[in-house]
Amino acid sequence: MNKINIVIATLFIISSAFFIPAVSEVEPGIGFSTATELKSGSYSFYMEGGGNHFFKVWLNVNQILHVIVRVPVDADFDVYLLSPEREVVERSTSPRGYPERISYQASSSGYYYIVVVPYLGSRGAYGMQIAVYSPPTETVTTTATETIPLYVTLHRPTVVITTITETVYEAETVREVEYIERFPWMFLGLVILAASIIVGTGLIAQTFRATRQNNH
Image (tube, rainbow, N blue to C red):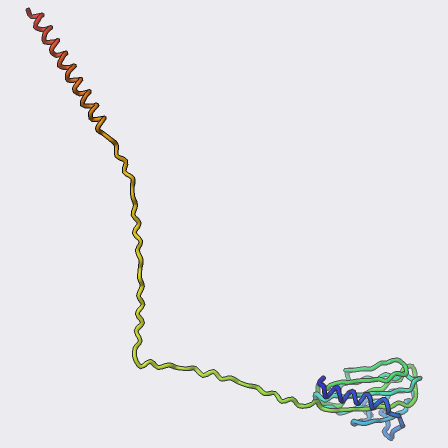
């Protein structure tokens, strides 16, 4: 509820505190078909205690209804609000001697019924205040942003040259070469060969001498 609604409701409740009930000329209905139509204003009725009082109020969709019922200090009246389909949409069941209050915003247009029910046969004069008003109209401004595509025309062909520089890293592998010194082995082989020749020559000479001696 906005601030304007709160102010109106507050003034309505304060004014009800100074309301002095006096029996009005309007008679309450005894059923839905005979419900008395009420407008915004102040009313007073007398409850005999033998039946319920029926009233109806026309509400347009979103209209707000405020109802206050002030009962005698020794009486207990309950108040029910029914939709056009006669379903209970709001109620007020305060203790004995306390006023009953109902506030409701209509969800659809039509007649809404107010039923005052005496509790345990309570009777006496009671005052009723009705206030119906429409909430202020709000102006909503919507801003729409339109996106327009932008096209760019190139009058000259555009050539994009991309140069890729490739860096090649050459890895040099150095192998360690181990040289085997062959000179000592070759020298030793020559010595052995020479010795063999010398020994062989000596044996041949001895053999030759021995042969000559045997021939003589």
